[in-house]
Length: 524
Image 1 (cartoon, rainbow, N blue to C red):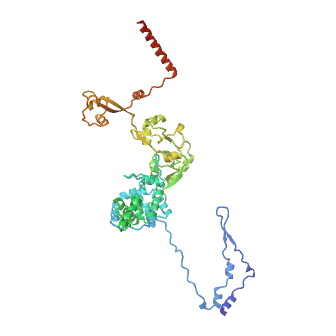
Image 2: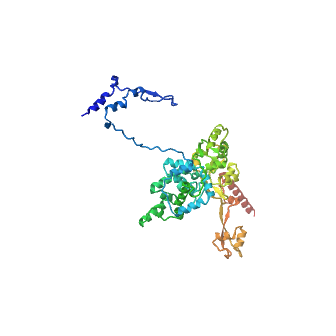
Image 3: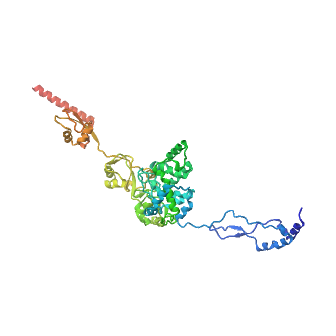
């Protein structure tokens, strides 16, 4: 049942427009051109005439009892607005992304004191990190990972991409050769991607994500990154069998791994609150240090440096995976240059005329010494050895790929299969050896025999399994291992078979000489 006052209120409202039975589309307001040649439109807001046509609140209040009017409370904001303040520097940006649980023990405090007491070491590490850290932070945030991981190269390599451990781990993220291959980090005669800034960072984060999925705990994932996932799994199983805890502090592990997470936590604490620990962090701006530039042809490092206006040393700091004077576009289609120099390089390369590369790759067709390879190429042996890191007394094996001057038939860019898979295969450059047997003369000693054949006494004794002071007897046979001389090689070659004409002539000569001897015998 409707109350009479409700009906009266409805009667006070203005009558609808007879033409209003059909709702018309609201007029649309034209916006400025968006750059594509088409101006988008949007519904117009109510006109002032329409607003004035609405009944004033006083008219409703006049017919509705005050008790019937309830004012709704304001709706709570579903998304509270937080003032957005850009990070002051990269350290502040990292602090906002720290998300790992903290570790607090004596080892952490010990490493805090160690780092805080070495400001020069911190400064050197931060100077190196300033070139790479922005890229690492960007990649970690893109994957939604905790930003403590950006501090890991401080622990692994002090942010030195050229670092090599005693176990042959290399690069900023310290990949072992086998693990690097597993994560598609090329390691060949021309480059080592374990040192590459972009490739090694991608591989390290892939590996860390996999370890975290495996263990479900960041501290255990970090222990596995340092010690190996198999070792951590076995340590967990041992503790489970013994009824012990399976967290990072509970496991038995080597000292290096035991200190690994505490070191990272100590560096995190220094970054999180440097004033508390009496540390002053160098400023690292929250902006990229380098830019990526694509190349589509082989190009000398010297030319890159000249066109970009940087030194070769600075170029190699950003491109540390390359150890040769050329960048091969088929294997490395991108290079890194300081942000301001990248555009300069691109402009100058576009205007550059003439060749861009002085070197190319050559696959050795057969086993040969460095001297033989140099003669084949018409090049200097010393330069060939230095450029390709060929040690003394070593020869190149068939299938080796070396860098050579780009000229003549070798004037071409390096194909992808060589740029990605080139290997330097070496073997000892020993002369050919022949075994010679000699008879001992009466009164001979080891020293006398060795002197006669120009070999060492110790060598002679070793070849014959004799002691250095062994006594010899006349007629005894000794073996000597002597290099094959050219004359010996020539004498060792089998005689060529005589041709039919030669054989016939020889037979006639033999027959004639036999006839002469017979005639002389008859005369006698």
